[in-house]
Length: 496
Image (cartoon, rainbow, N blue to C red; front, side, top):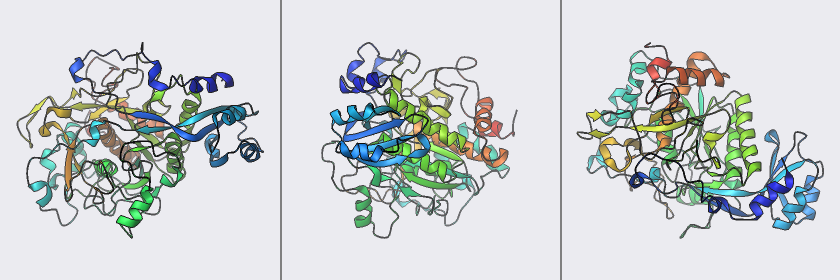
């Protein structure tokens, strides 16, 4: 990699999307269905990622950084990366010239701005808060709102439950997201409190500039508003919703599994925003704490031409987790990105060893409990491209109505400090759409396959997911479905 080019690209600051006039995605869908970019990106002030060559960090790194007025904030030795704060652009450029350093690039603040997954669709009925909840763990089909879960029936999860395939507590899924409400009725007993953590303490200068944003740390907000609660508590609801799609007690809503162990790696604040370096630290943390599956709910998108060092760092992190035996699953995104024709766009889905999941949805429904029409239609918002999409999963139909959305559980620690989260005070469930929800059930399937095929075999698990998918759209690899929509029953050998 050319060091001078790596630094010069970002220092020009035509910055990110401003230099992409000729790179609009090729998209056959109507312009009226094309949403705005689902992620926003800023440069973190005085915060840089330093990428080393294969020999690792120079022995005098700390002294060199200090002489330039900075501090080594975080050192991720396993992936050859450090986070340095306090440097000026000139200092960063000088550090770039040190032997053994292949890139010095600004840490990027990534945010899920205008993401439809943050928008709750009103259930339109009073039982959302007053429903009678199952008093004990029940069969998944006995969940109070299971009748609305077209998404789990579409992937034939119920066929696995009918023969007792509901997961294994020895299988661990790490969820990189906004945290988890570990006291939620559907999640109580599933969350490993010892492995779960908040990495928001690594977020110095990663707060962004959203209007009205508070300056206090989210960890402090948890301590003040919810004394006694773990710092990885979820102040948004996205992480809790994803977690319960993977494993649930099935009191309100069923999950793909019922006995899988979860742990939270809290990398998003309640605004679903943070620096890339924190996400990379989260992947390393999950891998080092024996995650069998790592679910990546990260609104990561930036220009790979502008930040080649960061691309290398992301690929190093996912390669490290793969070597440690973890299956990684990521959402394709809700911005209609065309991975095949927009060659500069980079997301976690683009990283090596990551299963990238697009979204499907019903075209219509008679009511909240169905029946649903054409549940395998492509969701109008999903990103796509043969080069990147691995498989598809049910994510919901966007603004077409609550009957075609995905139903999700709420965190009990939401609506604090200007939180823009989707759940009303007192609500137990919410309804939304997005590729994260199709990816979540894919992570649930990966957990079931680990329990069947064994740990430490990520390539074998991915192959099983791909080869068992229902081949939809164009035969073979389709730009929207990839290898097809996931099929839990076929993946587990219950049907041919």
